[in-house]
Amino acid sequence: MARSCSRTLLLSLLVTSFALFAGCTAAPNEIDKELLTPPTVWLAEPADFGIAAEAVEIAIHGEASMTGFWMPHSNGEKRTVVLFHDGDVNASATHPYWRFLHEAGFSVLAFDPRGFGRSKGTSTFRTWLLDLPHLFRWLRARSDVDPDRIALFGSGYGSLAAYWAARTQQCQALVIEHLPSLRAMLREAQGGGTGALDALGIGFTELAKLPEEIESEDVAERCQVPTLFVTADGEPARDRQSLLRTFAKHGGPKDLWLLTGTGQAPHGMLTYEGEYEARVAGFLQAALAGSTTTLRTEARKVADARSGNAIWEITVTPPAPVTARTAVEVCAVFADGTSHVANGWIDSGTARIRIELASAPLATTATLVPGAIEDPVAIWKRPRNARQLAATAIDASWSRIEKLRSGMLPPAEFAPLRKELTTAAAATPFPQDLEAELADVWALLGKELVASPDAQERAMGQALLQRATAAMPAKPALHVWHGPIATYGYHQEASVEMAKRLLAAPPK
Image (cartoon, rainbow, N blue to C red; front, side, top):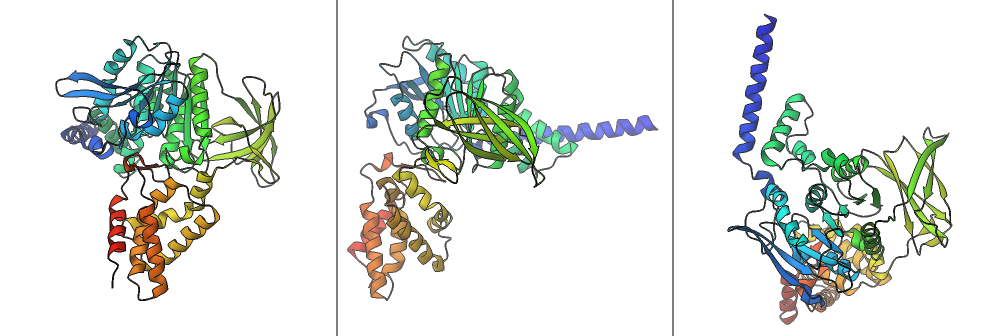
């Protein structure tokens, strides 16, 4: 009787498993279509920025190819960085990345996988990975590339592909930022279940729809490439957790940089403008030279705190003696994606920084911050330029801005938004690219005011419409704003044209 029950249960599980597998294979492209969304617009060429480049097309077969830009550097000593972009942009939109890397002295290959940009074929995660050997054979065959000095840089879904390539193709350095987990996304899509059948369903979904070993966490122990992991405290917790787990298991030399007060990449290029580029370029230069910029940290519990937490001391040792007193930022990270940051100073040897923590950290890291300004409360602060100050001043307004753009902002909130923005601009004048980014906001707020029966409000509306038209960039396609929600190209143009029409023929 017991054997009969076991056989019935086993048969039931097999039938359920087969049904789950059949359901997954029936629509193998659902995940790809949902997550990989190639834009149709083409924005920038290297020539737009005075960079000499070669157009690239690598044939996979008659109906599929990879295309992009090869940007050699005359003084780059054949050092190469390959850019892997996210799933909602193409190589033409990644110009802030390939520009700073080229300026830092690297030859750069910015490519589009199958189905993106000018590449032929249909985009899927599977083809993205399986096409990569063609790309690397093309790269290693070039006389202006040193096959022993190739680095990869991946962002978003591109970081999944870059991590896979770092393990399966020859490279010497890797930078990944905003590393998602497709498994976690599938779990959320299936209701977040954690039971046996839920786990079984997720397993079959991965088997049917996703390339083998695309989950970075699963293969991290086998990846030996020196890697800089970049994450932000404002990106989705699910993705931050994925990156931290992969970092903890990574088998090679590794460094972690947590960007505080920052959203999903590429927001860090604004909140840490200048420092971001220097940190990434410095890591790549050192890794390709066989050295390191990573600070070694050791954590130990030294006392109990009255709050019930514990005091931990983080010892920080730089790879080379520090020649001048320099700010150091220590970060303790936990598996759930949370983190704690503490500031300190380092002179020449080691620094010991104490931090109160609720539990033992998953890992600790440290970052040198040259040029930091001493502060009596925070110990030190990062210097901020005009663009960063202006961007910070309107952080609280972005929710209203997005609602206004989508037509979801109640009219009663127009005036508070207008006041927030004008107050922020008066305190910190907006740079031209932020003015351009907000041109549609000025136009929509102005449109509401010029229809007012009040003469003073109509005059304010006219001024806002004029501000919108004046903000139009000379080359709209090259506009980029790395705010909490990144903008590539100029989607505000229609609103600017509306402002021009209203100025020419104001409402009566």
